[in-house]
Image 1 (cartoon, helix red, strand yellow):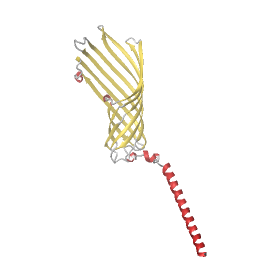
Image 2 (tube, helix red, strand yellow; image 1 turned 180 degrees about the horizontal axis):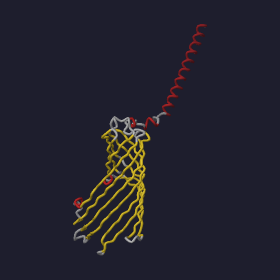
Image 3 (cartoon, one colour; image 1 turned 120 degrees about the horizontal axis):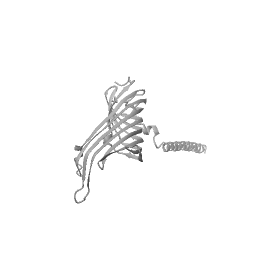
Image 4 (cartoon, one colour; image 1 turned 45 degrees about the vertical axis):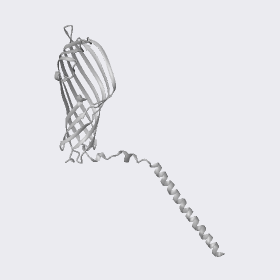
Length: 277
């Protein structure tokens, strides 16, 4: 009898111990499940940080001094595919110069200021437009000229992403807040009389300019950037040859597109850099 009672007590103790261990295990599993549920997504830093800054193309404390420029011409030979135009006597040039200075406030990130000058000069000696006898629509223009000067001031932010371990080749993304002002003079023939039109424009733009930088020397690199557009606002006031106001118009919008006329090749010198080799 005593042995039976001792056996029951031992069995009860073992069962209670197993139950306690089971309860502890269940609580641990539940706690782990809660932690897994709460931590289903990785922390923000681990999800976003791709450690691109490990490849350094620009070091903190550097000063960048650079210049970008573009030049293009338009001639009558460039319009040979426009079959509806005949007897074209057209020539024009577009020149853009943009000096800038920037400061690297951290590795691969810089802010700076830029000044811009753009000159567009074109002449249209003669052009004929003919849709054929069946359409009965044709006309010709001659003695037209256009001259436009624009000045701009910009604040920009540029971020680099290195492609090789030494940072000699890298892509960059640039956002630019730009204020513009300029004039345009347009001359044309009307009733055998040469007339003039003068326009003054002001504008504000937020541009996105991606590009590539290649270091040809440790502290000197060449850049190629492309203007892809952005937000813009323009206002134009027009007057005649005597200075009388003849009208005004404004335009704003959002436009992103690749612009062949906005490809800039530049040279940048980096100062205060003792780390790149």
